[in-house]
Image (cartoon, rainbow, N blue to C red):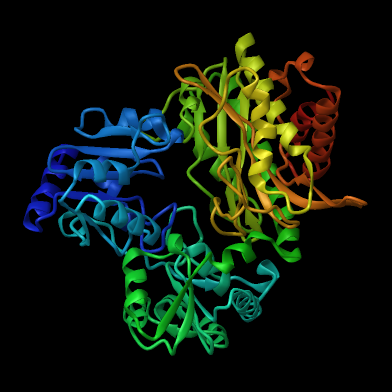
Length: 591
């Protein structure tokens, strides 16, 4: 079936249910960014494969909302369908809620409340009520989704404390302390990064994310882990039962409507489904206090064991990248035909050789030339451009290790480049270094530092349509807050946080450039003005010197880059393959 035919089927279901508009988010019951195939309804019914977006279908038309990372990709993938692209946060473009309030006055709008975030549901409900429209929770998609994949049910296991640093029991004690500070004694953890961090459980339910689809419900006198026991070994079941009451995954809906003993529940509207929030609101054995998930803040600051492991993970990740790059160069020099998808396969194979590697942390982005202007471009075996000995190749990739999660981007010189390309590469590098060199008082908000990177491109009238950096989980999600380098973020940077630094420039139809390292927030020094922090690089891999216009760099920036390259060489040289060591020595030579 074509996309338009699939939309017609949905309109048939809408007519049966007396629904005028249907909203299909990119979501699952756990509000995940990357979701299991069984819940990728937005992809199935729009054809758009990006990781973020919302599909809206009305009786008259349909539209897809997505952000600046995916404008080019969405435009290409929606071509030939009736779906109109709504470019989020662009001037004059309404939000989903504004669009529905404007077009569905007095009508009925449906969402699947089991997967719709409560925060979005409440906002939409309020907007619709003001125009005499109503919001109903009804699943109109899954009954007509032909060939829908099975729900995830991969083997689950407990991550050893030598990696996690703390046992579930120790983490639960921290959670209860934080809940008490917020005058609460209970919280439901629906998001998988929170639930899996607290339980130390891992699995492979989502591609590139080592998560088990599960919930954790913390109550005053007990904690419940909603995870089917047939997924666990007898040893892990016994271990988990020292901390949790184990309940079947599907029992969460029944339990949220049952007797919760007068729980004073702290509820994060953005981290719970619309249906589950409604259950709690109707439960007279619960009183609700609204606030953030306390686990989110706890896991955002890595413990000493995690940090030690993360540093080791980045050594092996850099080794894999160096070995890969030399092998790719040899293939190019031999005149072999190599395409973008080959790059992805080769790099994954090198990472798989590294100690304690558990695969990639996301779908590798390997964009040659104009393809790199699409921030989240992904080649496939069926559609992939051939590399040439000129211009840029952008590779954004990461690995999952028992010792941590990595995320690194480099823009490689494949041959002769233009002066424009060299200039823009250097502008991005200056952006990266200016942020990386930041020192700031303890208590500084992350969003305040975003402009340090952007200033280097703003002064040329340029910008990039994404944040400058994001938090990264520990053997978890590659995008995990609360820390972010974004103009919209107001989190506080703390010692032990890990965060990416990835400014870029994306010239549609020409090239894309991004330089990304993961950073660790560390203590710098204390003065009469208080405690000051700075950031140290975790990522260990050279930045391509051939694309740098040295005349544009300040002495301080060159010193930073040379010191960084010395650090890279010292860490990687003992471990890389012999040919990679020769290349590494040249790549890390001081400018």
